[in-house]
Amino acid sequence: MKLAQIDQLDRIPVELEEKVRESVLNTFESILSEKLEYVKEENADGPLNGIIGNVTVFNAEHTISLMLAIPKDTALFLSKVFIGIELPFESDDMGDLVGEVSNILAGDVAANVEKVGFRGQSSLPTATRGSDLTLFMPSKPPTKKMKFASDNTSFLLTMVLSESN
Amino acid sequence: MAKIKALVVDDSKIMRSAVKRALNNLMLAEFEYVEAKDGEDAFEKFNEEIEIMFVDWNMPNMTGVEFSQAIREEGYDHIPIIMVTAEKSMGKVDKALNEGGANEYITKPFTADKMHKAISGYFDDDGAIAGSDDGDDEEEKSFFKGILNS
Image (cartoon, rainbow over all chains, first blue to last red; front, top):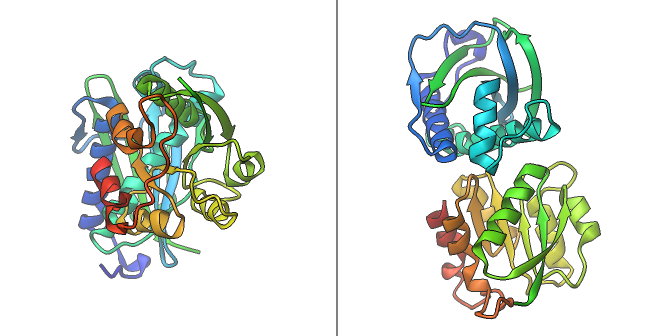
């Protein structure tokens, strides 16, 4: 896949979007051991009380930024299924966990988008905890917000395609 | 059971704990762990008593592949290196196994079953290291095992 100049794109190419969505479903279903669904046309602009995991998949030309917005309840559930105990939400370990989940997602995304010609590598993840967080991205690069939900979880992924600097 | 000295290398404390818990649950051996937070830290903590290593790829300072290469270059070819990583592309698997000298490749998130399939061959019935599978059939090396384990 040859990507056009970012400023000529009015949206993220559909095949990239689909591969990222596929990776989210695969990764989280493996971790959660429950069915996860993509929630179409969900307004994803509400404030967040939770943790944000940030990671990128990049090459010399382009960067796919992935911002996972995980509400507190989902983070607690994730910790229970991932390590067998519910971590205190305010603990450093919780940040570590969300960072690791972001890292696992990025690994899957990197392998998956390669199938449509985007060859890149994943960055190290970061995690940010807070309350009443409003998620926004610079408006210029193509951005896609996606919501996902399962019986015990609900979270958002914001995907941004930008030029690598 | 013999006590196996295992080096667990991951920048995530949570993942180091997950690896240790999985190993303990498998009951292939009794383990004594040395933990390291990146390749550089692992290289400092490495010693000749280490019998098996579980190494993440994507870490600050020194990656898991760079660490594995460094260990192999030091002449420690007999110690099984199990890559436990989120990196899934075929190119990465190939690089870890061929350039990095890893013996096995497990992708995260891993299950106990996946871990068992990858490492059980390295232990004998008494819970001692049976030796890495360094036979001459390179194709049998974990390239395909890794894929099956993913």
